[in-house]
Length: 279
Image (cartoon, rainbow, N blue to C red; front, side, top):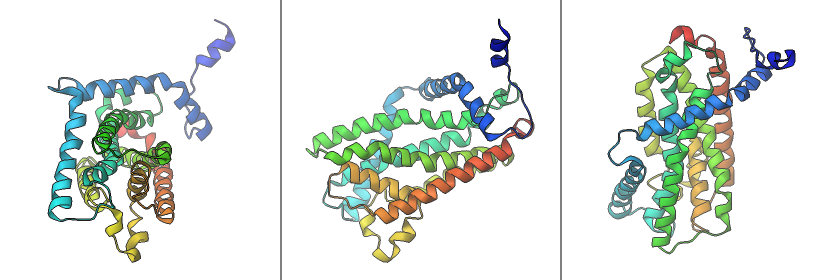
């Protein structure tokens, strides 16, 4: 082995490691990252009776419940589209966000043995959990396509913007995931906070109803929920021109999501060096 090759395989661990070096380390450990993604996917469906079918049953049953409660009983408006489509289009980003946050928030605790034995950028663990949550998203997306075919409701050119809104869903999921995963290391009672946040967020987000029922004077305040713009964006992309999209509200939601991501990165990097000692 030449000196150049040996130098490339050496890793120097130093305090207050510069950000550029840190992200270089993240790239060097990309194989570990993909291994953790694959492991999370396998563990999620290991020893389950119906396996991947859970990814179909859960959103489908939730869609039926929201349709009955909000559509049939409360008779809320659906912006001219079948109520199941309105609900399921919103559940796509919401379920991704909920699964990603739930899995990433406890990922560091679940990998405590790995953290205390070897060095690698700790951010790999929560991010890998978020990426693994995409499997359920794509399964639900196929189910959404089937429901749209059932109703004969085909999308138009706006469906091409769906990857953009999926990227926007990554922002709050990653930012909140970094915050809660780091906080959960030092304060274990945050494992009880995450389910409460998700349950509360489900009801204040436009999942079971259309954003159009929110009075105009409250729209910008309502857009302070980062998932509001993402959910409206998914409906706008999938349900043709039936759903209006507030570009100002989307801009506000995106700005808050970026702020959540930036502060999440800052807090995670701040607490990362002591995680192995505390955990």
